[in-house]
Structure formats: C-alpha cells, structure tokens
Image (cartoon, one colour):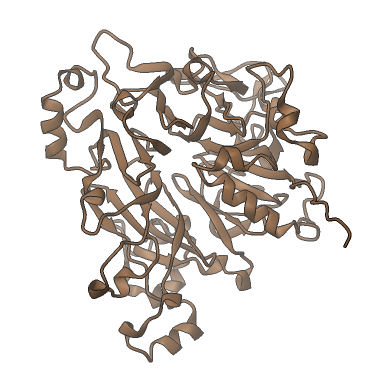
Length: 546
C-alpha cells in the first residue's frame, strides 16, 4: 500500500487488482449508492501536508506541547527541543495512516457481521467510504453512515458541540447520532451533510446564511452542532457541496439548490433578485454581517431546471466565487438532433459576477492529439460522430480554476494560473486565441488564464500519466486519481511538501505522488490532502467443481 521505507521503488510493486479498484472507486463516488454497496470492501484513510491545523488526524502531529498562536487562531504544531515546530517540522509529504480508520487484520473478513456487538457509539465501526477536506478540518464518513471529524474547532466547523480542537477523529453526534449520513462537504468555516432519508444538515459559521437558517442579532452567528436545513425538508437531497460562504444541494430529481453568499453570483441568481428576496425577509436583514447579496433560504437554480430542454444535474462542486454542475445529456426531439444533443454529459457553471448558468464547451476533438486531429481536420464538423465527443464524468472547482475528467480517462482544465492547470506555456501555440495575459504583463507565466477546457497532455498514459477516474482541486493546486490507484498532483502551495513531493512547493506539470497505490478517493484542501486507500478486496467467490 503506502511504503514509507521504499521511496524510490514505488513503481516496481505498485500494480493492484484493477477491476476491483475500479468497482470500489465507482461506488465511493456515488452519494446515492455509497452505503449499501461498499459492504464488501475496506478503506483506510491517509493524509499528508501541513499539520498546523490539526487536520491530518495523525498522532505524531497531535502531540501535546506548546501551541503556536497566530492572530486569533491556535495552531496544532508539534514541538522540537522546546521550540515551536517550523513549517517543515509539521509538514509530511509522506502519506500517513489515520489510525482510527485502520482495519488491522480484518481485511477480507470485513463484513457487516463484524460490526455487530459491543461497538461504542463514538467509535469507528466500519471502513471509510468518503472524505472531505477544507482549510482547517477534515471529514470522514464510514460505511455505516457515521461521520467523523478532526481539525480546528473554532466557530463550530467540526460540529462536535463546542469549539475545542480535535487533532484526532471524533464522531459528530447530536441529531446525526441515529441517522445514516450519505454525503459530506467541507468549507473553510462550515460543513454540510445529507442523510439516507434525504435530509440536509449544516453547522459552523452562518454569517452569510450558508447554514440555511437565519441568525438574529442576539444570537451567535455559528452553530456548534448540526442543524437541519428546514427549507429543504420537502426535497430528497442526495449530495451536497460547500463553497467558502455558500452551500449547494443536489436532489434525487436532479434539481440544484443554492443558498448563502451571492456577491459573486455564485448562487445562480442575480444580485438584484437576491436583494429583493432578502428585503422581504426580516430574519435575513437582521443577520449580522449579511447584506442584500446573501440569502439563507435555499432556492432552486431555475437557469437549469426551467431551461429548454430541462437540465438534470448528477454532480455538483463549489468554490469561493463560483459553482459548477455536471448534467445529464438533454433530451431533444429527432427534429432537433445535432452535435449539441449527442448523449454526453454537460457541464454548466456560474459565478465570478455572472449568475446565468453557462455551458462549458469542450472541443469536439482535442487538437493536442495531433494524429487524430489531423485526420478529422479533413472532415466537416457536421460529420463528427459520437465517439469524437468528450463526455465528462467528474468535476472539481477551486478559487480560480476548474478540472474535469472524461469517460475515456482524460483530464481537462481551464481557468486562471497555468501551474494550477497543468498546461505548459509552449502548448499555447495550438490554442493562442484561448489564452489571455494578466494585467501584470504577458511575460508572467503563472498569471496566464485559459477560457475553455484544454487537455492536460502530461496526464496521458503515453506521457507517464494514467487513465483518470477522479479529480479534486483546491485554491492553487490540483489532484487526479487514476484507474490503477495512483495519485498525481500539480500546482503551487504556500509551503514545501504540501503537494506530496519532498521539498516542492511549485509543480507546473502533473507528477506522481510516491508511496500511493490502490487509492480510490481524494479530497484536496489548501494545505493538506486526504486519501481513501482500498486495503481489502471482495471475498473470493467459491466455484463448485463441474
């Protein structure tokens, strides 16, 4: 699995059971089927990055000792010889196992039967199936629907009922004690989850109404324990996503609901409509720090649901200033059949000042694949077949960039800062019209932006990459999981080792993280990464002799 003592030989013995890993990964990415279908597998949790925020859940970074205080936030760094540990002392580029989720000797024998008996309500009683990460904390969901958290507790972001820090995993109780959690999301100052019965719970900061509830002047703007979002009680929610100051929910019907801060139009509605809505809501107006550009009431994104044809979402992602969703192919009549109506998923996004969901247009065929592109250049665009169209299956968004992986295992990026995109400047010659220099000057590579998705050529198998099956993005870096269980990262960070590469804080091209094999899930935060590692396979079926 993850071998700390074999740094240079991770490629020799890194092969895994390919089919089993793909099945596990597919199930771990499904917010609807995740709990019943992961019963035959076991996943452990590994983390790496900076430990200042107690978000790694690893004992050696949670030891007692002097705590460093910067401003009004206490950091959980360890100590070295009586001095506060520096950034390198409290940073691990090697993935470390979170022992609370270690399966030990269970491996193949992990079944529902092993979870029966005298398991305490606060203990980990089954393998991990989903992870979420934010700047100051981490969430882990296990197969039995129990939700665990660790990190900095200020503002109630951990949901443990107080503001104490939790350097090691602690179960979130309260209203979730008897409920089965199905999906999770974490932002810098608040967290969300949905349950198996379609309810949504939120906790942490409510300054911008991102918890889906009003906050009067006489009350604290944070909730220390999960509270149900009552305005969604008539909708069956199957997935949630959290931006820094807004929240998103996906229903079983494919509807998208949004609430919280709307200063960048990240809720999918105009600033004027948000002001008119909140002006009629006394609770919203009485919320401290909330202006007319924020709303605590979840509202459906009508730009998708009321469109013609109707757009039904299947995946959602949110960042500080924007939201993107993955929708099913539109259903059109035969008379309207065209390239635009081919049976491929479609990505829509809004924010950064635009409230109208705009379609993300992929190239009909990527010109970076020179041989394929040169052949198709000889044909008319109307003769493109379904096989030449790009079908996105996974999405992620960060502060200024976006990532998508497709059904054929390719990775596409677009947005600001080329190091986050994994696209080198010398590739610009093929897409000159899509690049825009920053106001600081066109000679600054790191300030380049790209307007539409472009293939990350370095992630192609022939270039040392792999077949992508999952993507994640944080403020200025990107992570991709491949079908063979490997992790690739690139981008820039504020300190060394955060990307999983020793002594590296700037990595413009995708690079494989050593010692990671059989990874089936990843969650990226600003300064740390959380991994789901498959450690057990389904029981070997017994075949009777003929």
